[in-house]
Every structure is written in C-alpha cells, then in structure tokens.
Length: 363
Image (tube, rainbow, N blue to C red; front, side):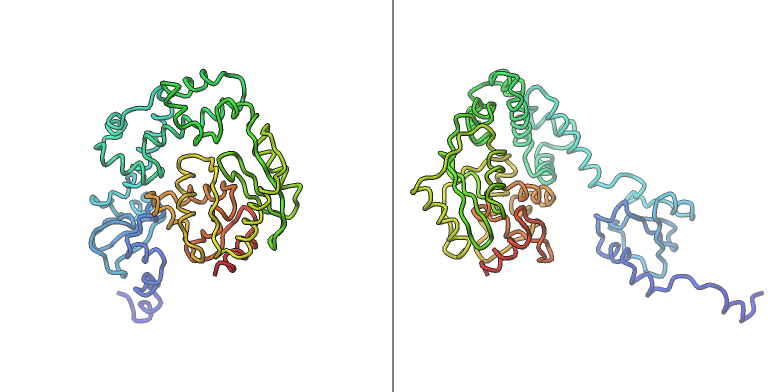
C-alpha cells in the first residue's frame, strides 16, 4: 500500500494546461488537415488514436497524448480510429496521388485523353475530378495537356534538330492548324523563328536611368516584351540577348525613347498609371497569374495565397510564386505588389530593396 510520501514522489502525468498549450493541441482543436501525417493523438478514455483533422467529438485535454507515428500509438495500446483512419493515406494525399497519376496519363498519351476517361481512371465523376484537378494544378486537364505539349514543342524546337511539322505532330498536336491558332501566344513568335532562337524577330530596346538604377525596355511588334531593372546597363543588355538569342536587336529611335520615358515616369510616380501594349510570353498558368497581378490596384498589395484563390487555384501558392519570379516585365506586370501572408516582403527578381521602394512610392 502506497504511503502519503510515495504518492507525493510519484511522477505526475501531463496536466491539462500543459496539453492545452501544446501547438499540436491547437492543430487538433482547429482540425488542421495540414498536420495530418505529422503526428497522431490518442484518447485514453476511448482507447483509440486519430489524425489531427479527425471530425470526431473533441476529447478533454487531460485524456489526450501525442505520438509521432501510428506505430508508436499502437505500441502504447491504442487502435486506429475507424472514422478518420489515421493509419491510411489521408483524403488530401489520395487526391494528390490521383491528380499526379492523371498528369502522367496526360503527358504519356499520344493524343489528349478525354475528361471522362481520365476521371474514370481516378475513380471519380468527370465534374468532381475536373474541379479537383484544377484546385491542385491551377489548370483544367485540357489546359494542362496543351501546356505540356507546348513545353515539348519549345524544348524540341530549341534543339533545331527537327522540322516544325515533325515537332508539332511529335508533341501530340493532331493538326498544324490547331497548333498555329495558339502558337504566337505559346511561343511569342512563329515556330520557325523560335526554333532559330528568335531569328528575324525585330526587337527594339533602350536603356535609361531612374532612381532605382538602370532600366532596360524592349519592345517587339506586339508590344513591350521586357522591362529589366539592375545596377549595370551592360548586364541588362546581356540578359536581353540571352532571352532572345538570335533576335534582331536594335537601339530605339526618338519615338521609342518616349516609351522608355513613360516607364521611367511610372517608376518615379506610380499613381500616374502605365498603359502599354504588352507582348506576354509564358505558359497558360503564368499568363493567368500575370493577368491577376495587373488587376491589383496601385497602392494595394495581395498575398500569393490571394492570387491563387483569385485565379481559382487556392492550392497553387508555390506555383504562383514561381510565376512571379519568371516575370520579365517589371512594373508593367507588378509582381512587386505581391507580399507574404503576414505582409512581409519576400524575394523579388530585381532585389527586395527595389520592391520596398516601389511599394513605398505607391503608398
């Protein structure tokens, strides 16, 4: 029989306040699905363990213990919850795997598979799968297939080893006409010119100076195709040459200098606005992101998550950030107006200090 002293010396279990202050408990309370797979929690009164997002009735903190793995919880004598099934893949993981398998199916197919066939392979209805695919990738299955084929076309044309016709059919397009309908948006020039590194594509450019350093503006027949910021004018010109390897680059005339002055004026006084025709070259997803950036008002900011939600792809935050980083038309496509969720400044292709200065002027 235990004495009073022995009872006092016996180690005490976790107190309710200790559990309540544990970040893992907050994840359980909020049923945070992003923490699924990171840990599980057990309830001693029921003898089961659950994933953080389990919708079951919330247990009292004093009855809860945390485990790093399912095996650890089972070794402690608990069994898996039949409702949330923590010892199996989560619904989010199952969805991600289904979409990944669909992407591989689309990429490997000679012709773009029909939505019904892709959805059937995933074991879902066409409507549900279409919505799920778009939420995960940011594109519809059809747009993803077209974008993948465009990527194959660009890669093959860049080698210069195949004719344009061979490349088009090799990438899965079933007719020349269907490809040429979208080739200019896809490549920014004719397929032949792209294969030759932009040969015969005339691009005017000029370098100026502004309070943020050197600024280069380049323009094709369609519109402004590059606005680059930096410290060294020569580096900016080399960057333009790398971007348009074999294009015909010529210095801008007096009329073109007015456009450069307009861009510089916008940098110095953003509220005057900037309305220029743009030659935007990128994937379908990048163009959606860049269009969303152009809709952010002067003096306002948006988070990467805001942009992802705005284009109907709330789970594509990382892809949105990559699209912002790929933007080569500074200020006209205002990726400087995108900030982190907490309002902090993240990376900027032309330097965080320039980003901070642009936002300060717009305020």
